[in-house]
Amino acid sequence: MIQHRASQGLGSAVPVRVSVDRTLRVKVIDACGMTCTFCHNEGTPVSADNPAPAAGSAPFGGAFNPAGPSGRVSIYLARNGARFAAAPMHPDEGFRAALEQLQEALGFTEVHLTGGEPTLHPKLAQLVALAGNSGYRVSVTSNGENGARILPGCVRAGLQRVNFSIFGTDSGELAEVQNEKFRRASLAVAKIEALDESIRVALDLGLSTRANVVLPDGSHVRRVHRLLERYSPCLSVRVLSSLSDGEESLDAIDTLLAELGATPHEVHLIAGTSGFRISYRLPNGGVLVVKHIRPLRLPETCAGCRFNNETDCHEGYYGVRLYRDRAGTFHVGVCIQRMDLCLPMEEFVRSGLCEGIRALRDQEFHDLRA
Image (cartoon, rainbow, N blue to C red; front, side, top):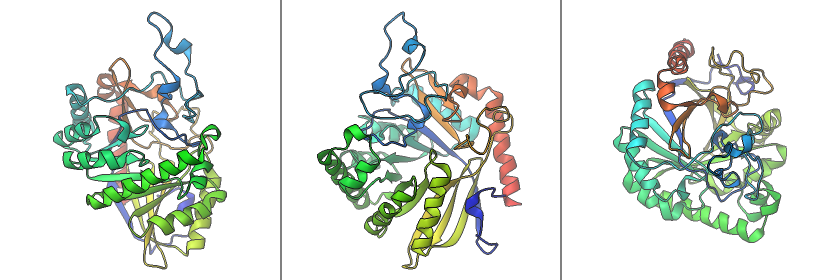
């Protein structure tokens, strides 16, 4: 069952498609040239604001700095129990072994490269090639700031899809969702121009290209209208609810759909992940996809969690994430609000947590199809 407000009013005539979550998210780098105010940074501290501690001292003085000169945020850091800062992935045998272990343990077929901003990784193409050679389809999420330079090499290495996170069509719109200290018009103009060029390059390369737009609240509805007018003719556009804004974000999505005259076309449920999608037809014949979060939980792991209620749990069980720390240890996480649940790779694949994920996926697939 879809226990989510977005399902209200869809009606039984809207077809439902069910698949199984086979995607592994990999944080390949922490660096980013944006300072978006709603960024969860995959649950980890901003590395630039938390330099490695001196030898022999307590790690980070016992806590991570939630705010620093970078102007970036990790919105859950104050309460998520993060115990490591993420370091860049290396295209080496350690990374290959980690991918293959998780593929064997959980049957993953796609790897989604995230950050930070993945295109700032100097060896992103090598990471793409290694993942592809390990049997994965490879996609990446990018803000576009470096895509024009990096994407051609990634496509040659086997990259199959790019999701561009788009925050504005002009410098004023982009500034609205950036840290106040970094709302310089010249910087915003440069970012918008870089994004436009990255989109052009991606389309010229024949790369499957999508636009992701986060809608925090009603004040951003007009911004999304302008984004759709600018990008929807050539890109598949997905509107995402803001995890940190909850009902305000959902209300804003309802307003946007009503103003667009959108009608529901298909619901796509993915067994084993809280994320689901509703496709809408627009009066002009276009399609808009809205990505939502449903209240999915890992039965044993989430049962006693302090966030396990309708107010505090923002993402539910979204899927598996892979990290590498500064010591070179690979960590596997299942919740950006509970980074204390992360386990080292070897421990994870032997754990009841891994078994619980397999069981949840199987049960969900059976229930959703029924």
